[in-house]
Amino acid sequence: MMSTMVRVGLQHQQRFPVLAGIGCSCLTSATVHACAVNSVPCLSSKLKKWKNGGIMSRRLVLGFGTSFWAQYMNMAGNCKSFIASARQKGAVAEVLQNVEWPEQFPFKDEDFQRFDESPDPLFYEAPRFVTHIDDAAIAALTKYYSEVFPPSNTPGVSILDMCSSWVSHFPKGYKQERVVGMGMNEEELKRNPVLTEYVVQDLNVNPKLPFEDNSFGVITNVVSVDYLTKPLDVFKEMCRILKPGGLAIMSFSNRCFWTKAISIWTSTGDTDHVLIVGSYFHYAGGFEPPQAVDISPNPGRSDPMYIVYSRKLSAA
Image (tube, rainbow, N blue to C red; front, side, top):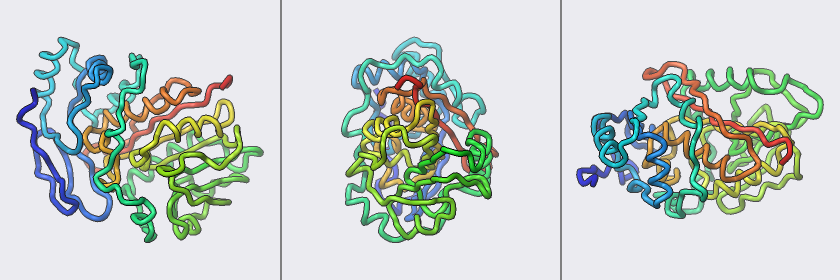
């Protein structure tokens, strides 16, 4: 049993200690770096644990190095160890390859609880005209968008930027006839130059998206998927409003408003986050098998950046 766990960072202003196998920054009222474990168990054992209801302890109780994880998982399952650093290029892309998903969604209600359960509109009431990832990560995301988005001003293309704010990180000058922003702060949304319209909505209270079926060709979500407390409801709605073949792009880093991120996110590392987001696509139904890509521009020197994406099935 993991009896030597160290509980970390339960106070909002508390500084994370530097522990073996973890990289983190201090907790402040701004976004913070979530701890990233430098190794994860083999996927088959992890999914078996989920299937048997054995989720790891909640909140930030991390701090174990590669050797501990290897020993623990070898004792637990004798599997081929999947020791993949979250900072190694290629490791993230492998996470969603040939996953043996349990029959039922493996997470429980407690996994989507937050340290701060106060109403989200209070937290987002004051506009924050800041960026939540560094410039290098933003540039990497913008470059990725330029490679996968439909060409600018393509007839019939509509884009939904979910959990949007005053900036969407789209390529410079990018335009479509309809670009909708959905977010929590109206002042931020008003300032976003790429949006043609916006909707203020708390998806954690009302995950029903106010759009017709088959309305959008692309849905984006930047560093906010970790705040969704009803992710399956939201992803089912995403599938409903996407056109057949439409693309959904979830991007995230290791930074967040820690008190508002869901428990399963704050108690796991970067590679696990890829698996978590992939599970949302899988269990929502109607999507192609999700895929992941690591677009981190300077591993170890700037914010990491990960993409999990999928397309709506043509027959969905």
